[in-house]
Length: 253
Image 1 (cartoon, rainbow, N blue to C red):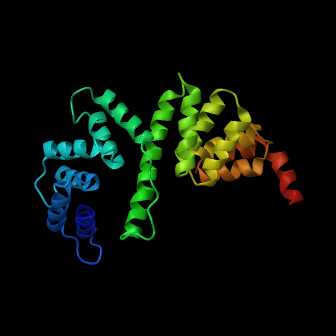
Image 2: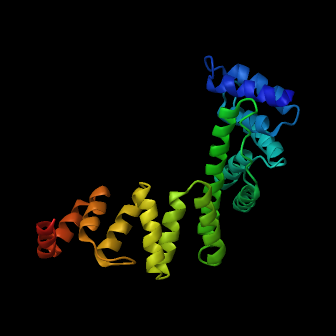
Image 3: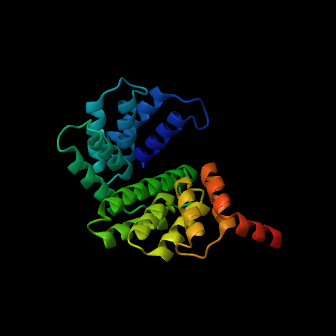
């Protein structure tokens, strides 16, 4: 397909794959492909107009090309356009249109690239990038639904975890479970997020180990996670309040 080939040639020029970056050439290739209504090229061309790479900045043209790509369910274009609405760059009914676009993203299927096709490695990179962006939308929508429609909110957060996995989604499920007094579930998801180095979860998992929230009390683990969170005052507090118990534990090891 000529349009696809032109898009990949544009991407190689933009990213400097095999040669130096050349935004002018990227613009030319993307334009040829976009004129054939190829959605990935329309999205890429919109970004060049947005940031002024290879062409003068032109927000109106960027929005126009994003909208064309959105009409073909291009996931990246939906995310970019949603951001423009939510940031107030596009003035009409920003938040509502941003929400609808993110709903559209959640419903878009992301097919895994075929290893036998040309440019497989680049397609694989885009595939993983799209999965991350879709998961981010699921997290944002899931968090917004947790108070009024908790089942739907949790479903979207779990979908985000399945897709990436998303440590932010793990943390948000933990937070919601803590607030609804589901101790074991809170500990489970705080632990998952912590083990994947999600720093916001460190104080939470330390609290669980200190108080026995959803697990057995383990002061050694508590101190470990407070230290990872760089919360030295909490480390000092726990050691001061539990000095005799910690001394006994250290003697046994």
